[in-house]
Length: 316
Image (cartoon, rainbow, N blue to C red; front, side, top):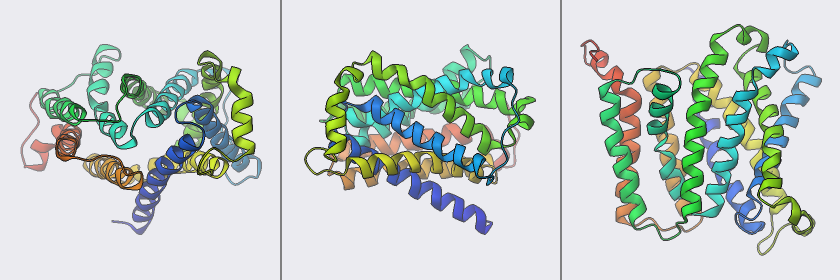
């Protein structure tokens, strides 16, 4: 494996892990999920500021998009906003490890959206692998103490939006927009700009804007008990953007199987690490369910490559 890929993977893992830690800490300092969409929007604004700074300072070539081409990225920005906002709410409304376990169910949503909306076929092998994914999540959820229906609904919505985002991203990067954008980094940067703009209405819809004075007071006081609101919020915003862009650069150098291994290992690191960092319950049923769901997710990702890896041919 190339040294550059190792560095990318390391930054991806470390960035993703500490993003989740800083994000959860910022949520705790601001009252849990009380200002989840304010924090989510702030993170996207920070990421937008970072990528715009790269363009303004000449550290990265600017995308050569026309107004009509930029508008064609709006759907991708919308589903990115929904995925991020919902995931942040879920992480703050319940235990971080539990929300990450439910996130492992993303392949089920991806299969449904891909087939039902984009008419992408799904092999019987992949469909079979959804059984342990869904079953593992059910087992892990059975004894979850820090569980709320709102958290489960939010992470499910995040999975649905992420499924649309994956399909939209493939559509964007397969057409003439790819050359106008100038690469994956700029594609993610423009998407983040759209997402930052489109997530703002959620602050009004959830009533967080009406309580803005409370958030301002918390920000000035650097959070409630334990403090650290400003530090954790800013760091989570920077790391969210950085680890997502680094991951696109890393995955460009990996095979499909390598991608699957890396993504599965990353989720396991975050689940176990967050449980340790915040003292979250990880009893036997939750651990077993987590392992089954992650194994199912990995098998789903490589299901269609198994015959080739074994020297055979694919047959649907």
